[in-house]
Amino acid sequence: MTLPRVRFAPSPTGYLHIGGARTALFNWLFARRARAEGKGAFVLRIEDTDRERSTEASVQAILDGMRWMGLDWDEGPEVQMDGRKIGGGPHAPYFQTQRLSTYDRYSEKLIAEGKAYRCNCTKSELDILREQAQREKRGFKYPGICREKKLSKDTSGAIVRFRMPDEGATTFNDLVKGAITTQHKELQDEVILRNDGVPLYNFGAVVDDVEMGITLVARGDDHVVNTPRQILMYQALGFPVPTFAHLPMILGADKQRLSKRHGAVSVLQYRDDGYLPGALVNYLVRLGWSHGDQEIFTLEELVEKFDWDHVGATAGVFNPEKLLWLNQQWIKKTPLNELAAQVKPLMIARHSHKITPDLDLNRLALVLAPMVERAKTLLEMADGAVTFFERGVTFDEAAAKKHLTAEAKTILESARALIDARFAEGGHALEAAFRDAAAAQGLGLGKLAQPVRVAVTGTTVSPPLFDTIVLLGREESLARIDAALARIGTGA
RNA sequence: GGCCCCAUCGUCUAGUGGCCUAGGACGGAGGCCUCUCACGCCUCAAACAUGGGUUCGAAUCCCGUUGGGGUCACCA
Image (cartoon, rainbow, N blue to C red; front, side, top):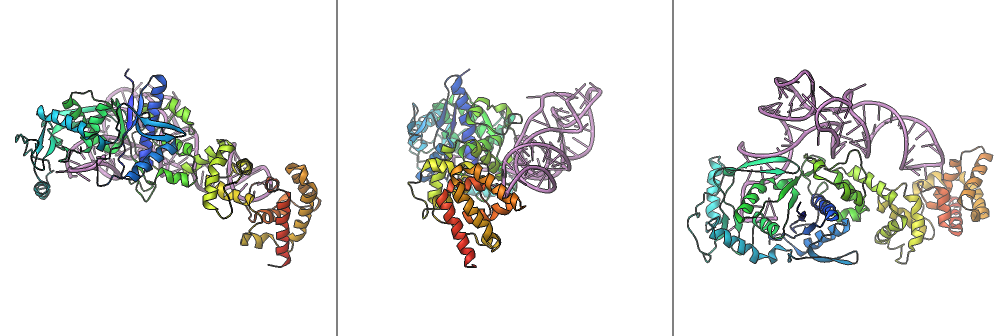
């Protein structure tokens, strides 16, 4: 078996969105497994041949998105990732606009062999034909006007067209969709090289996949119609045809193709919204691939278990609720120190007036511990952790009105006394003391705990009260209860 | 419209001719637990688009229909 070499070849016309990320991921997983068995490689190539729409900012956004997801590349643009350099490689450069001489070379070869030809039909001439075809309700197909003209290289405005066969058919066996056949009469002599030497998609992709030794092309479903054309080009060029795998589209809740409105947002948006990269990866891989009934996978498991046999052929709807659930599962199994490291920048970004960069990560990890069971995103954790790093408390009005009442005064006073006397004994002792106190009054613990919770956190919802008090510290807890009592006293 | 692809609970899916009175997960409903909120646990509702074949037997194979998606550029 030959060493599998795969690639992800985005065009830098926007950020890395969910669909692109999944394509990159499937390629990466396959390469990773192959690499474990032998060598193989995952190549990142930037297809920036649409000069109108390609931007440097998009290149950066895509690279950043890949790095955040943990998808490193064996060959491609050179960048720093996790403190090490990745990218580069024997087929550099990995930007198509820097490879123009290569396309020219292959194009000349095709022309010399009569498999491609120059064409100087203008766009407006063709538009007229196209409109005419439309009026007559026929499909438009370039009629091959320049096929036999043998135009020379210096013909003004000439582009290069690939000579498609008129008869016959091409069949390929797609790894996810099975056999797909296209009649050659459906194909037209398409443009492969512009006048300025910049290739069009099908040609650029084929030439580079040949040059870079790509053995398996896995990409979005929307490319299946391109595949027979590309296969014909491989054959014309005299190179072996790679294997193809077309991944089904990802749809929005309305079953329409994902757009900016639904979830085709940048993967980096998920980072900013408090998602763990592992959770996103886990979600994306399950959208289209399965391994029996298993839902949660580590990256290592995915590398080991991923296979094309279990990639489904049907388009899938992106389900934000399930992603959220997975994120929660991932939060629960991520070590506290890692969570703290990721939550801290979110706290600083959202609460800069209260949080300073010297915030202690060890203390943050302790604060986060009881929140792990109840947060669905890192953002919730960041917001919930703030109160442990500030002096004093801001009472939520509705909570205060309901729980910081005249009747609660004695409860708060006795709670204050208990905390004052027994704080040093720890959370369990405090809880036991509160329980005894409640029982002595014939009440449930909740009757005592709720006013105290509001006093100490300002809200009715928090991690377990005694954990909270311990984390807050004795002085701060007492000060907050005093503040609550003062508020009751003034009848506010 | 031409060509191509797809079709199991609301959603993601298991299923590769008998193991299917169709399994799991998210979400939903109800309950248990409980200091709030969660976590966790238990229970319930919920699907093989449709019509024909093939076969002793079909969610699984074939054909038609319907529905959905993709694509028809000097975009990728």
